[in-house]
Structures are given as structure tokens and as C-alpha cells.
Image 1 (tube, rainbow, N blue to C red):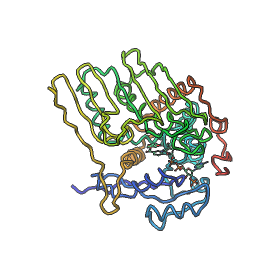
Image 2: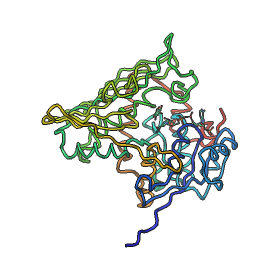
Image 3: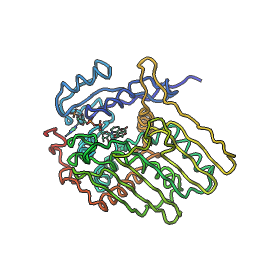
Image 4: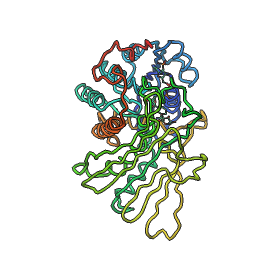
Length: 393
Ligand SMILES: NC(=O)C1=CN([C@@H]2O[C@H](COP(=O)(O)OP(=O)(O)OC[C@H]3O[C@@H](n4cnc5c(N)ncnc54)[C@H](OP(=O)(O)O)[C@@H]3O)[C@@H](O)[C@H]2O)C=CC1
Ligand SMILES: O=C1OC[C@@H](O)[C@H](O)[C@H]1O
């Protein structure tokens, strides 16, 4: 049987920082190197709010085709008729305004995590995508890893019985003398003006594992929003440095414990000696997930019958030898491409309703911890001329 040609998606990259570069390099690798043949990606335009030259330099650095258009503003990018979907890669503070800018211009959007600063902003974006019949997805790449898919299958097939508790940690060990952490106060990780803080940046991954195991895997009609109890330590910038959340799903009698900290490390020696950062505990066993919560590398299935032996099942991230690259963000890009091909406006793996519930949990945790962000980044009123859209800093 003749194989049909792959569906091609034309991407526009909004911002030129660290993750924009990593993601774009993943888009540019040959999908066959991960055994994907039904979709492919083209990078057709890149925009920088600080200078067109940054976009030019970015295109050359990631070795994108010389035909890629460089723009010196986000407004120009979202107006480009050759772009099918915009990847928003700005700090959390900017996601609402930038994603609205793209949606209002009629573009599909894949927006980096955390989706927004507030749940109200997330709801507004989703209402807009729904009204305009556009695809919109939160870029939690971890959900699309084959390892995550396998873990969800193990849970739904009953491999560990009823799942009653998940403990998930993403902490990065950046403690520094005199009460500081190893980020300048202006860095997006701790800068409240950029919606910095452990929870929105890292805790979202701990919550991802709690939600993948205790919520997403439930039948639709049984999904329930959790009760939330949070403990938050604030950094001197006002952002959170350590946040611990207990989530209670009352009907299911389950608890999720989502932990994040800038000070201590989930993996102190960076060799996994500290054990699993994620433990999904059921009535007849446990799944342990190893590697950083955002980029897991393997799991162990331990059941009552394991007899003291549980092998680590490893999941390597494929690389394209020609580009000597492969980070694992391509799987979420493939998901976006398939949704566009199939006319789906949201991803079944991270539906809009679930992004909203997760943002509501983070809202509540930050409220309990007394963390507040400036009005310009927490408003849910779209302003195309907001400094967040025009790059005036
Ligand atoms: N999925 C993942 O694994 C990761 C996701 N992320 C997420 O990606 C997003 C961006 O993070 P990261 O790439 O590390 O951030 P960077 O600081 O490296 O890049 C952010 C980019 O946003 C643009 N920008 C616009 N306004 C501002 C501003 N006022 N201050 C700083 N940057 C601004 C800049 O691009 P320009 O000047 O060209 O417009 C800048 O290069 C965050 O939401 C983060 O949570 C981050 C790391 C890993
Ligand atoms: O999403 C992320 O994953 C990797 C972390 O190092 C980074 O801070 C975060 O934004």
C-alpha cells in the first residue's frame, strides 16, 4: 500500500530565549528518527520583541532554513499568513497577552507552561480559542513522552490496583549563601514581574504527575477538582522559593503531594542516587518514575509479587544523528500537528478543562501562601499594546 505524504505544520516562534531554541531545534530534526512518519514540521518565521537581529541570529544558530522570516515584533509574526501555529516561549508573565495576540490574529497556539499567571487568564484564552475555533494547548511536553503514556496505561490497566497517593517532587538545589538562591533577582525564575517562583516554573511538573495519575486516568464523569492545602516559603523578591501542596480528591479517597523548591534538590548528586522523584502508590503496588519530573528517563513497577526485584525500564530520548540533537519536545509538537490535521481544537492528553483545574490549584496555593503578582501581568483584559506584546521593557 502506498504511504501518504506526512501532514506538514508551519511554525512561527514567538521569542528567542532558551526554550525557544531547544524547541525549535527539536522541530527541525527528522521525525523518522523517532519513527514518526505521519506529520512533519517546518519553521517558517521567528520573532523577537527586542530586535529583529536577535531573530536573524536565532535562525542561524538553530540552523533553520535560510528562507525563514525574521521579525522584530510579535505583532508582525502573528500577522504572517504563512504561519499555521505560534509557539509562545516568553516568561509566564507574558503568556496571556502573547497567546491572546496570536489567537485574536486567528492563529493556533502552543503556549509554554505555566500556561498563565492566573486561572482567570487561562479561562479567557480557552474561551477565545473556542469562539474562534482555533487549536490551543499548554506545552507540558512531559505528558507526550512514551514513558508518560506507558505509565498512564499501567495505571488504567490496574497494574497497581486503585491509585490512592502520588508523591511528586521537582526541586533544583540552587541554595546560596545569605538566604539567596543562585539566580539574580531579575532572572525570570525569581522575578515577580515575570511571574517567577518555584510553583509556576517547576511545581507545574510535580502537579503534572499528580494529575496524570490521579485525575487524567479517571473516567470523564468521575473527574473531580481537588481540595488544596498549601505551604509556601517566599523569597525576598516576593516569588515563592519552596511550595508544598497536598491535594485531596475526596470521592476517590486519594491524595496528591506536589513538592517544589529552589533550595534543595530532588536528585542531590544528579545520578539518581536519591531515588525516584515520583511515586505513584496503589492498593497492590507502586510505580516509581526516575529522572527529573519534566524529562523522566525510566520507571520501575513494584507489585506485591515483585519478590524484591523490580527492573528499571529505561526510555531513551531519540536523537537525529545528522543534527546531533534530540531533546524530547518533538512529541508535543507532533501532538499539536496531529490535532491540526484532524481538526481537533484541544489535545486529549491535556484537555482545556484539565489545564483550568491545574491553574486553579496553583492559584489557590499561591493565594494561601500570600504570593501576588503585579496587575499588568495578572489582568485578564487583553491589550494588544500591552508592553508584554510590544516588548517595551
Ligand atoms: N518546557 C521546558 O522544558 C521549559 C519551559 N520553559 C518555559 O519557557 C518560557 C521561557 O523560558 P526561557 O526560555 O527559559 O526564558 P528566557 O529568559 O531564556 O527567554 C524568554 C524570552 O522571552 C522574551 N521576552 C519578552 N519580554 C521579556 C522580558 N521582559 N524579560 C525576559 N524575556 C522576555 C525574550 O525574547 P525576545 O527578546 O526575542 O522577544 C526572551 O529571550 C517560560 O514559560 C518557562 O517556564 C523554560 C525552560 C524549559
Ligand atoms: O520547564 C522547565 O524545565 C526545566 C527547568 O530547568 C526549567 O527551569 C523549567 O522552566
